Image 1 (spheres, rainbow, N blue to C red):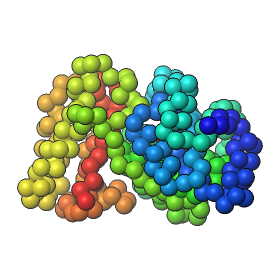
Image 2: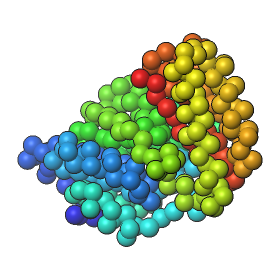
Image 3: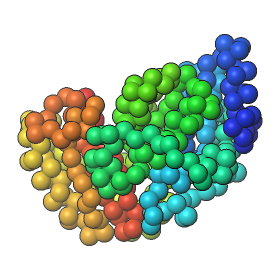
Image 4: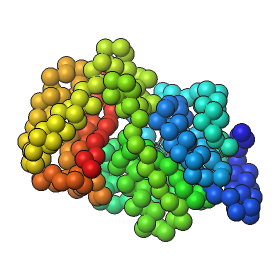
Amino acid sequence: MKIVKTIQNMRQLSKKAKIHNKSIGLVPTMGCLHDGHLSLIHRARKDCDVVVVSIFVNPMQFAQGEDLEKYPRDFNADRKLAESAGADVVFYPDAKHICQKDSSTFISVENMGKIWEGKTRPDHFRGVCTIVGKLFNVVNPDVAYFGQKDAQQAEIIERMVKDLDFNVKIVVVPTVREKDGLAMSSRNKYLSSKERKAALVLYRSLQEARAMIKNGEKKSDKVLDCMRSFVKKERLSRLDYVGIVNSEDFSAVSEISKTSLIIIACRIGKTRLIDNFLLV
Ligand code: PAF
């Protein structure tokens, strides 16, 4: 497996692959790889000739006071994990090369980028889209892989790809969960053992909602009320939002249908976690 640190070398490698008619799969990450990321790499390995995993903790998607400084970083562990999952290349650019200080061009997806996650974290998706757009330009992948856990991010990136004619196919891979249901996330590392138990409230409230819907409930309000009171019972949790949305544009729906997505964001102690459940 190759480690590539500069934009120039990454471009060269990509160009070479294209000359030999090889397809490139890109798995963009911020490192701290877990089984969720590995499932994306496995999928890319199945689909593509060359698998590139990018590791870059993107300062543009963190607001002041968020966890940029303490975001977990362990390049050596990540390198080994990426290789064992089948990556051919780890693209590990330096922040000063990829985010120039005088840069003043950003990619911002309107509407969908401003609601739910985008409301709580105003410039977050602008930071995500800008870096993902840059990675697409540098790596030139045929396919890029994102996790369903960050459902709104994946949908926003699909929107960006359509709107700006990026020549890349987006594949969304199902959420990987711990045995007890907690969605895998790099931020789970922040949880104390008490908080780890409390964090199950996200998955369990989604399960409650799912059971109600399975039993015939079609009114979003009823399901959301039930989720809110379920989360309230967990002392260590503070709900940010719950919503039932159209999975394509994230607009809230009042009647639940097969294309609805249930979304939740919750603070457990100081750690903010998100999860979702697709009804199809
Ligand atoms: O999902 C993530 O880890 C990040 O938002 C991404 C897509 C790598 C962009 O920095």
